[in-house]
Amino acid sequence: MERTCTFSVFGKARTISKSLPNILEVIHKYAEPGTSLKTYSIHKVHGFWENVSRDLGVPNTCLNRKKILKAVLQYEKTTSGVEGPLLQTDFPTAETTLGDDVPSINEEDIVVEPKSPQSVGNVPLPSRKEDALQKTAESSIHTPDTQSLESDSKSSSSNANAKRNESDESAKVNTDSSSSGERFFTSGLPQQKTFFFINENEWKELRQHQSGRLFKGLQWTNIIASGIRTLNPYCSFGFRRHSVKKLSSRSKAPVFRCMGYCRFQDCPVTVDVVVYDEETLKAEVVFKGGEVCHNNKELKRRPVRAQSRQSAGELLKNKLPRSLYLESLQKVPQKVIQSGNRDDAPTKEVLKNIAWSERKASRADPNELMSLQKIIQQYQDTEKDVLQKILMHPKGIMLCKEDIVYFDATGSIIRKESAGRPPYYVYELVVRNPSKGASPLPVATYVTCDHTTASVTYFLQAFQTDLVRAFGNRAYNRPVMFMCDGSLVLLRSISMTFCRTSLEDLLQKYYVLLTGQHSAQEFNIPILHRCLSHYIYINN
Image (cartoon, rainbow, N blue to C red; front, side, top):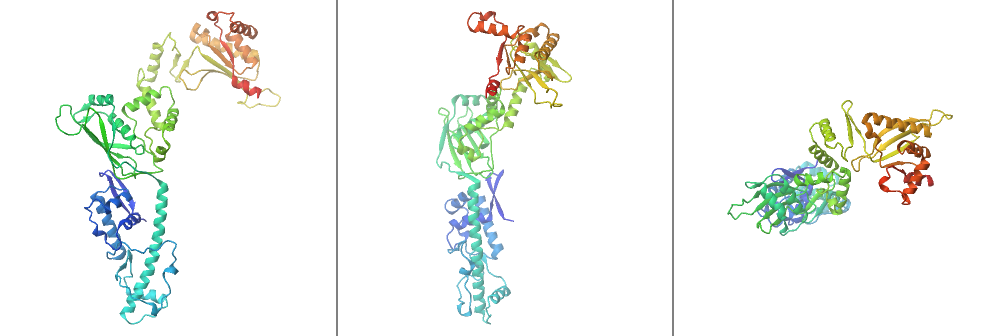
C-alpha cells in the first residue's frame, strides 16, 4: 500500500493527501545534490520551501513544512537506518538495463570507493556481513580473508541494487506525472491584487439587513461570489466568515472583509476580499494557495440561496426545470465546463425543488383540496374559469375550457382478433393544458370497431349529453377550434355535433367568411382545422 501524507488546506476543516513518492520527487527537484533536508529551515518561507509547496499544491505554512520534513526523514530512517545524502547527481534513466550498469566483477576489478559504508544516496546497503558474502558468492567471487575485500564487495553489490531501484523509481515517477496531468484541470491566478465593484443598490439593501458587525441572511455570499467569478471563473467558492463596519463606527478598520476557499477537494486556492471605501465600493481581492487544481471527475455548485433562489423560481413559472438547466449550461464557457465549476447551472433536481417550493408558497391553503376549492370560487364566471369540479375519492378534478380541442383516432393499440374482422379504433378528445408547455389533457375516449360517421357521431353526442348533465347550459359553449387528421368521418361528425350543420354547409360558411361577405362579429361557429403534419405524411 502506498504511503501518503496529509496536509492542512484551510484551517483544520479541509485536508489534502499526497503520496510519499510524489513528495520525494519534488524534494529531489529543488534540493542541491549531496545536501541533507535538515539544512533547509522550516522557518524560511521563501526559496526552497516555497517551490516545494507550490509544486505539491499545498499551502506554504509552517505546519505543512514540518510534516514534509518529518515524513521524508522518517522514510530515510526506515529504509537505511541512518540519514544519508538527500540527492545524487547521477540518476540512471528508466531505459538503462542492469547489464549495462553492473559489469561482471573479478577480483582484479574490485576498487574501493570512498563512500559512506551505510548508504548510497537513498538506497540502503546490506546491513549484515552474510548478505554481502552471499551476493559475492553468486557473482563467482572467491572471498579473500582480508577486511578490505569484504568492504569492496559490499560496495559493488550495493551499487548494483541502488541503480536498479533508482531505475524503477524513475520509471514510476514519470508514469505518475503523466497520468496526473490528464486527471486534473490546472490554471494560473493573478499574483497581484485585483478588484471588482459592488453594485450600490445591492450594497444599500445589504446594509438594511445588517445586525451588529454581520449581514443577516446569505445574499452577501451571492454578491461576493459573483464578483470573484469575474476574476476567477474556475473555482466554486464557499465563505467562512465576514465582518462589516458599523455605520456609527469611527475605527480605521475596513468597511467589509471576508475570507473564502475553493470547494473542490484538491484545490488549495483561498481568497480574501476587502472593501475600504464605501463611496466607491471597490472590493480588493487577493488569491492565495497557488494555482487552480481540480479533479476532472469532480463537479461543484454553489447552493442556490436568497435572491438567486427567488429569481430561479420566477423563471420556473414559465419553464420546465430541464429546459432551464439546459439553457443555463449552454451559457457556461467551455473552459469553465472543463474546470468542473457549475455555479451558473444548478442541477435539475435543485430546480425541481425550487419550482415545488414556489408552487407551495403560492397556494391559497396548505391543504391541496381546500386550495383547489378556493381557486374555483376565486375564478368563477371569469376567463380563468377552467377548474369545474373536485373529486374527493378517488382524488381528481374536471376541467372545461372554451379553447382548442383535438380529435384523433388510432388503430394500432388493440390487436386484431382475426383476419376477417375489422380492426378496433381508439378515438380520443383532447383539450389543451392551461399551463404553457404542459401535456394536453384527454377528456373522453371511445373504442369501437365501426369506423363510420354514425358511430363517431353517437360518441360525440353522448359525450355532449354528459357535459350538459354535469355542468348545465354552460356545456353548450363552443370551443374556438377543432383539429383532426382530415378524415371525412371525423370532419362530418364534428360538423354535425358541434357546428350543428352538415360539412357542405359549413364549408360554404367558411368561404363566405374568407371572401369578406360575412360579418366577423356574427360568426360564432368553431374553426374546423386539418392537421398539417397528417397532411404532409399522407402526401409523402
